[in-house]
Length: 522
Image 1 (cartoon, rainbow, N blue to C red):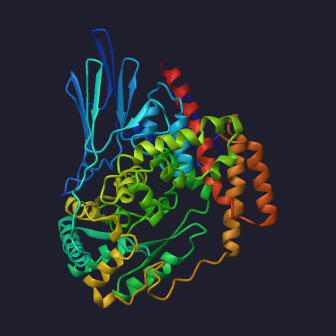
Image 2: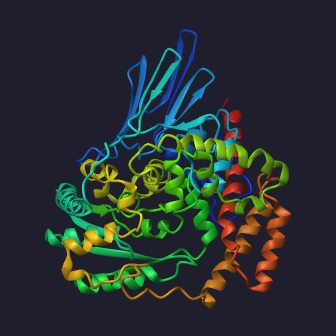
């Protein structure tokens, strides 16, 4: 019997029973161990995740009695975790389920050092040294104790298309992607923000006579405020569609703890999506997700300085420009040394070099790392239970078109908005969030509700960390002292560090729990 996860307080129980109730420990998993001529196999001999009509999202494995074969689609957006055992291999779409089988749970300090400074893991890294995620277009083979893993990033040849021609091609290609993704019966649900990606999907759906039965907008945790709600309301009013506002869970700390497990400890975002996921009913529903629209067509994270560094091949300087040391304040000095910046820069620079020759090197890096390793955990993880998920920006024809265009075409971050206005001039007057060409959306103002949110987050985070079993990745005294200071002064400008503090404390606790589980089951 596995030992319970200790000292997790009542914010979000994460002992064995709670994980089991949440379905985490019921996730598919396969463990194969070979000792001499004896092979022991436990778990699911075969598992697959269905792909979309365009082939996106597929992944799976099959054990035929002698050979294990596993695969992912061209993007590798559905995470499949694997680890080599001393005498075998284990594989699962759930990192926590994989950990529950026992084995080495040593935290990978080099990979974690990048994550804490960047906000997502890169390449095929995970928080654990012996656990990897399969790459895009992966082919894993294990036979007689010999493992081979191969994969690659899809590349497009540079295009010399003019901007006008590219806009027209984008409009036509995306229209075809929505048509291909909308095949089938049932209702359609669209999470709608104030940005471009979900708006473009909405307009194309309505143009095809497919009116979403539900348009859902989150009232985000501070500091983002109600900007999305304001813009989404204007959109749904213009199209005479129903609009629902989904409130966040009152306890941000509890949402963060639950999110960490649901996203395999591989994301610093997404806690806000949990309440939205819980409002959805999967019976016959197609859920539309705008993943990758920003990075492929709107210059997300692209700026002239970063582009110049990439074009010059200055990978180390580009890596330095991306890293943020803020969360390291909460880490003990000796641990911070193990999570050293030099190692993080070197690891990040190695990954950057894989993208410097792409037509849009910044877009390529963020697509294959942040979008694949973090953002994809929503449509190919949290959304799975709602039914069919449609991701038209990942349609291979859309991807191949946009990734062939030079970064300079997106540097002003107007390409996607201009495409939408050209395709739908009748709605060109409707505002975008952060669009300087139209009347601005009001900046969120701090409210008494925001102050209550931060006070509760600080109180519950400090309580969690204080009760954690002797953490080595978090300075408990610093967390408690800073919490008291922020609450006393009413200045919460630095309080956003707390979700990261919770992540570190829970990651270490999970590592110890998994290690004890493995020893108990040995």
